[in-house]
Image 1 (cartoon, rainbow, N blue to C red):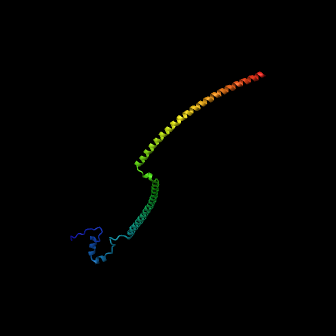
Image 2: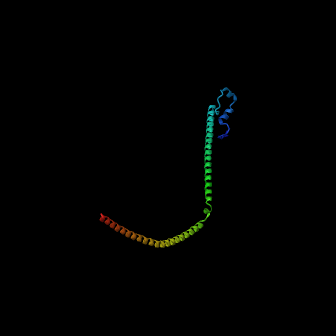
Image 3: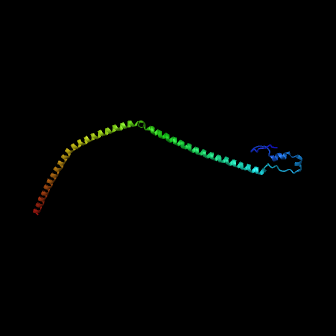
Amino acid sequence: MNKRIEPELFGSTPDLDQVAQSKEPIAQSSKQAPSAPQNVPDTPAVKKSSNVFTWLGAISIIALAAGGYTLYQQNLATQAQLAASNQRIAELESALSATGEEMGESAGAIKAKVSALSKRTDELWTQMDKLWASAWRRNQSEIKQLKDQASDITKNQKTAQANVSSELKTLSQTILNSH
């Protein structure tokens, strides 16, 4: 018998021992006490391993549910943040559109306006200088007149003070002489 039986990982082919036992006459096996089959595992060990797998499966399902709930909460928070951001963007867009044409003008147009305003400012400064010079010349003649009036008033005041002083002396001597 050169028939060789190759072992299979998950096969249902019997082992050589099992084949030899099945060839023995049934009479011999009835004389001997029946022995427990060698390949049948104990039932408590099967129950323990199935309980462990059941618990591992339940824990895995609970962990997956908790992870899913956490991701759901994060998704809700992200959607709320996205909605707030969209609202803020809409507000900014409306503020930008409210400025109107000024935001739409090109840099060249703004430069032209600045140049025109600069020229106008220079012209206004020139006009202001002319007005200032004219006012200064006109005011110089008035200032000279006012200086002349002030010196005349000062001279008149000194003369009046001298007259009052001499009158006072005369009066005081008259009063002294009459006593």
